[in-house]
Length: 154
Image (cartoon, rainbow, N blue to C red; front, side, top):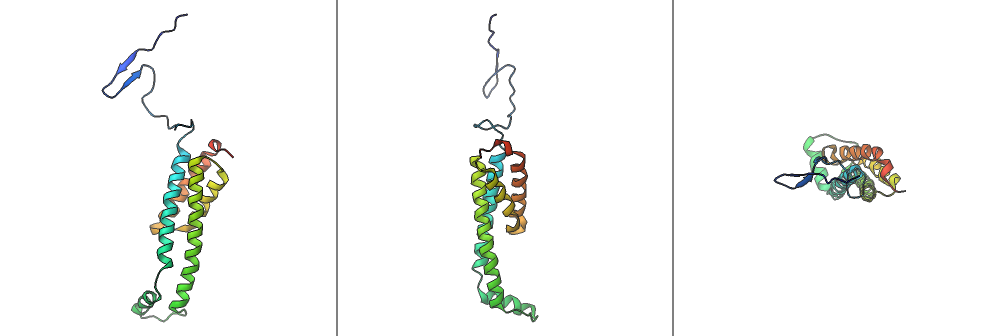
């Protein structure tokens, strides 16, 4: 049998062998889908937003808290120093969770340790961020990681 060369279609952008699709098949250079890459990037973005948010909360000045409490004219059963202590504890927890989220994003991009990537997505849910952005990005990446479990090397 003779092997027939495929005819070539010339387009303004490239030369495409006839019979091949010009649409991307959502595969990256490793042969898998791009879902882990997208999930990893979303986790990294959410982690950076979370770290920035909680670091800014960590450095809130007690005098600023007092001015907000005094502006409302209400008496609260908590002082500004106590409120700052509570915010500091939440900030440290948020920063730690954001770092785990960043680690999960790196593992997702490398397609290694699926469990660590999923844990990063789950622990990113309570990070919140501005307008719940970190939570939304973590949830989306969590779903993408669940869908792409087969593509990870344990």
